[in-house]
Length: 279
Ligand code: AMP
Image 1: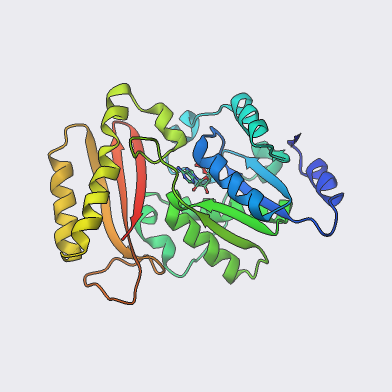
Image 2: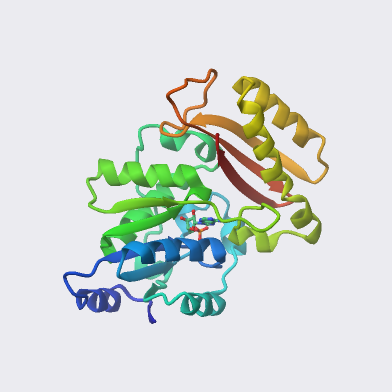
């Protein structure tokens, strides 16, 4: 396993790869867990050389304290990556990526950026677009893998690739969960014991909402979820929305030839957790 923290050395190494071998790329912010590893395993099915980046991207954090507190566990991450036979790890410094100006570029993603996370996390998707585009330009992969855990981000990356005519196949990978249903996340390690025990309620509730959606209107399902969280003493609902998978626009009525997904963001104490489910 090769580990590079500098662009020049990484590119020099990647330029020695044979023409008939293709690169699969998995961008991460580290604090790796089984969810991240599932993306790598998926990438290994289609790509010959797997590059994983570990970079806590400052421009996608809307709250400075969240950036400071984001878990950084590089030593453990490298051990985990060894267990899945990852080929190349890229762990650049902020300086290496941004130089003197830690700033994001402004993007338009045809409105995808204004929904859900976009409403609550100012500038988040400009930060995501900026770092992913930069990493794509550095690594130049054939395939890139993103989790459906961040479904809005996945759709935005697909839109960016399409709009900027970037020749990379973007693949979405299923949400990997703990045994109790909680979607794996680097943020889970920051939950208190009490909040960790409470957190599976999120997935349980959206699974029930999925069942209800078969017979009830979106509005009724949304109100039911809101009520459930109002009664919960440890979890605070930020949003629960039912939206078209493609446009991410919320819906009032079901249309039989469209695909829908429910999206949720919840505060468990200080920690903000997100999840989603195909309806
Ligand atoms: P992060 O390090 O949180 O930025 O995540 C890096 C990539 O892993 C993103 O594409 C995430 O969507 C994906 N990811 C994070 N958690 C999970 C999970 N539980 N299941 C599947 N993919 C995930």
